Image 1 (cartoon, rainbow, N blue to C red):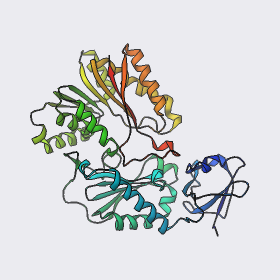
Image 2 (cartoon, one colour):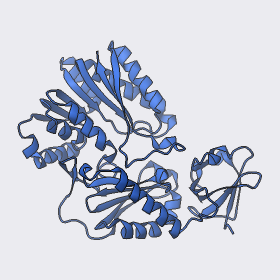
Image 3 (cartoon, one colour):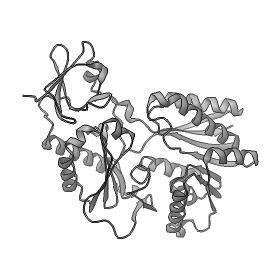
Image 4 (cartoon, helix red, strand yellow):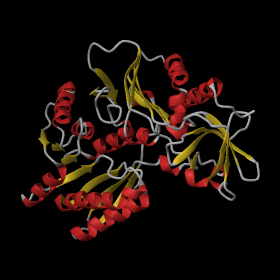
Length: 399
């Protein structure tokens, strides 16, 4: 028997019947049983039909997140073990060994574990617990990860807006195993990177761009490349290893630039004859300055941080995306390539394409779409959960 029950308003069950895992507060009619934050409850339609087992989140507009749509799959250690084993098996099947030793092991709702992110960097697991439900079951989930992953350590990076919206305080620190005596180093498609899993952006590295970095590297031979928002140099090293004539890398973080330089040193055997320049400057200002100086490039990468976490931020974010794409298109030589990305959940792929098209029009540039980018296969997207498709990108060729 359920300890608590959430009943929806009439007609508000359609999304759950389509197996979308979120229940918004406006769809809730009643909650019976006084569930604690993160506790499991039944979700039922107004007519009494069972819809899902979910985790209750009294502080969030997403009032409940579904663990299961099967009434027999009651949330608990057995179900979580099943889901984690399935997530690990998917990565073993989808990610080739030569891709490297870093990948996302658990991708939240897309792996049936809403609010749980687990990234593996060599022998280190970095965990983000971002929902009330995962916080409620944190000890069980951490114990299962320790058992199933074989990692030497587990480090927590549970922080950010998403956790705050769930009514949860930030939590960071070592959960299991010893801290490494040297920087954790990963290998991606033969390139070596140091990862600052304790203080770097996200969990330390942008694993979702793995395949796109390789693609950019394959396109870079003989080209002058501009890498904007370069962070620790992922696209930079890929372009250099791919034979770029030169790469100018720009980021507003001096610490990220230094890590990028260090990563270049780690790969000096592969890229020693190539030319790399690093610039610690605000990217918006740098793009305008380069344009005014008459600089031109053959390949430009725009991989900015999240401008629009939610749809309500889309209007403000659209201005930022248009600004950088407009400047980049003006810096492209005829026949040049622009790889432009958005990782904002509040910007749909359709809206992003419209923004870039508007930038091209204002730049007086005609361009063709050569490819659409998405996240690597260890960041799966469920058909019933389109919100999981947060990373989108376009490869454009200027006519």
